[in-house]
Image (cartoon, rainbow, N blue to C red; front, side, top):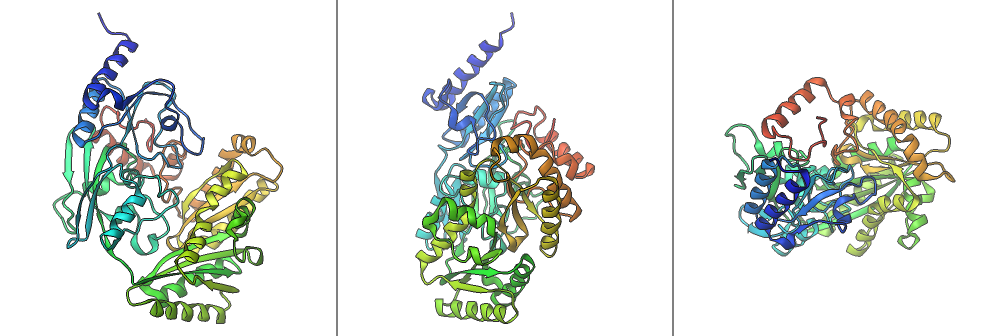
Length: 478
C-alpha cells in the first residue's frame, strides 16, 4: 500500500532530523524569517527548514530529498532582491539553510587566499582578512548579514567592482554538493588551472539551481597604504561619465569606487535620515562618490585626487567637491550611498531594476527611459543610482507623490519594467547586473535572452539536475 503525501513528508523530516539533529530541522508556524524575503515581495510556505553543520550533512540532505523527489531551496542570509532563496507556496519544499556552516577553514598568506564555508558572513570575512593584514574587497549594503555562499550564488557586485571585479573574479575555488549528493572539492586556490571546463564559473551565479556551494577559496589583496573618498557635485550624467574617464586617466588602478546618485535618490535619504546630512544634493542633479586606494601614502593619494579634481573643475565636469579628511568622514559619505535603498523602503513600495549598459551609452539610456516612463505615468519619480564605474545602475521607480505605493506597484510594475527592459535591450544591456534572476525576473528572461542562450542553459540544468530538485522555478522556467 502506497504512502500518503503527509506520511512521506513526515518520513522525510524524520530522516533529515537523523542527519542533522532534531534541533536543526525546523517546522511549523515559526519560519517567517526563512519563508519571506526581506523586501516583503515574496512569501512562501516550507515543508521544513534544515540546517546542516557540515558538507557531509549537506550531501546526505540532498541525497534524502532527491530520493523523496522533494525540491530544495538553498538559502544563505536571505538578503537577495529577486526572491531567489525563499520557498514557493506549496508547503512541499525544504529550505536548506547554510547559516550554521560558518567556519573559517584556512588563511594562506603566501598564496594570498582565504577559505571559508558558505554561511560565513561577508563582514566577518572582511574583518578576518584585515586582522591577517590583507584586504577582501567585496563590499555591499547587506554585508553585515549576507553570506559568502549567497554572494557567490548570485555573483554579487558591490561598490569596488571597478577595481576588483564581481564575486566571480574574487573566487579561486569552490566546494559544491551536486544535485546527486556528491561532493566536488575544487578548493585548490590555483590561479591557473586549464584542465577542461571551468566548473567554478559554472556554479558561481547559478543561484543554487545547479549545485549547493558549501565553501570557497577567495582572493586576498594587500591592504592599501591609504584610501581616500571624495564627494563630487556634477551637472549631468554626461559630465559624470566624462569624469569617470578622467579618473581612470589620473588614478589608473588606484580607482576602486565610482558611484553615481541622482538628486531624488539623495532627497529620500535627506528626508528619512536627516541626521546623515547629505552634502550638496540640493545644488546639483547628480552627485558622485569616488574612492582611491593607494599603495604609497596618503599624501600621494591626496595629491593624485587633487590633481584629478582640479582638472575636472577646469573642464567644467564638476561644480564642487569635498575630500574626506579622515576614515570617519569617508564612512559617513559611504553610509549615505548605502542608505538609499533603505530610504526607498521608508518611502514605500517601489519597482527595482538592476541593469547594466555600456558606460558610454548610459546617459542616452537614462534620457530615453525617463522620457518613456514619464509619458506613461504622470508624476512618476526616478531613484537612479549605482556603480557607474562598471556600467551598473539601480534604475528604480517610486510611485507618484500622494499615490498608494503598494497599489501602484501591484498595478503597474509589469508595465514599468517592460518599458525599462525594452530600453535596456535597445541599448544592448542586461536586465540583471548583480542581483540575479530569481523568481521576480523569471518571466522576463525569455524576452531578453536569446533562444540559443536559453537552450544552452536548459541543457546544462537538465544535465546537472535532471530531477529538477535544486531551486526549481528560479533562473529558468520549467
